[in-house]
Length: 100
Image 1 (cartoon, rainbow, N blue to C red):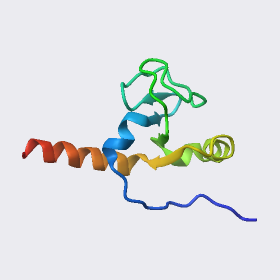
Image 2: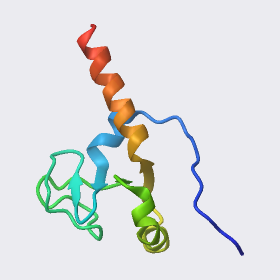
Image 3: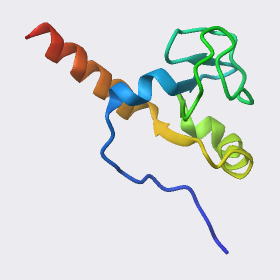
Image 4: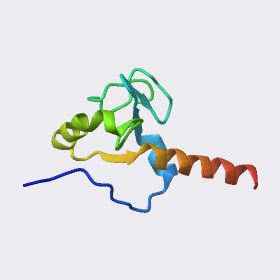
């Protein structure tokens, strides 16, 4: 079987993603809810605010493809969110709140 990673677009409320998002950088991860920097990819909850992670976003997806494959195998309950799409949606929300 030749299973590959592909993007699938789905309408999501970004305000529902943010409190349950882990943002993975080059070496470590951060909590999207409280910005705690001591998060490990294996964590299911934030060590600081205790939020449950449902979504994971990678700042540089191309560098973490092997980790993503492993994550999909070990933790299929997580939804992988494109970081650029997430940032763009959060920026739109901030802009809308300024003009209200």
